[in-house]
Image 1 (spheres, one colour):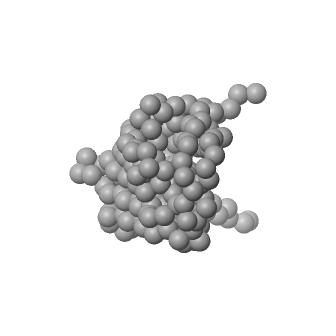
Image 2 (cartoon, helix red, strand yellow):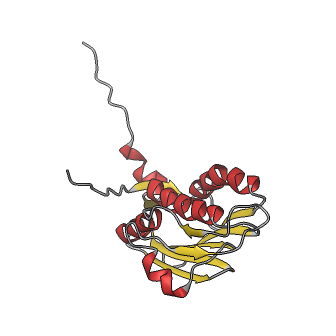
Length: 190
């Protein structure tokens, strides 16, 4: 049986994607005492053609990892539309970070990184070697970005945090030009 990675292209108001992200993850961050911000500096009710489910999946994977591996501080998601119809997203945390020697491993399927670190006040990290994750989340993130035709970069400092920078191409659309796709067929009765 072959697994297929399917991407759909739908009319999307990007502001709703970021509103959903905030609604789905802010409580989790709040329960850990973390500051969590989501900022989208694009116009509301401005539509693009893209796969909102895959973008949300990408953002949920990145923010859930950030929350999981951040003991104190913040997670910040910022996004903006660039003039060339590219969506620029940054996911930044003040978590445990990743050693430079291990950055290349994090996007491998089932790739895991060992961390030796101290416990913090919230107890989310202990004095043992941690095997971070099962190794699928960041592999999926990379796959989504590539399938959408974008780029994904990561910068990290061990003990200081990690930052993911994503650029995704968007296709502009106007709802009034494509609303004809959704219609009802009424057949006359004789």
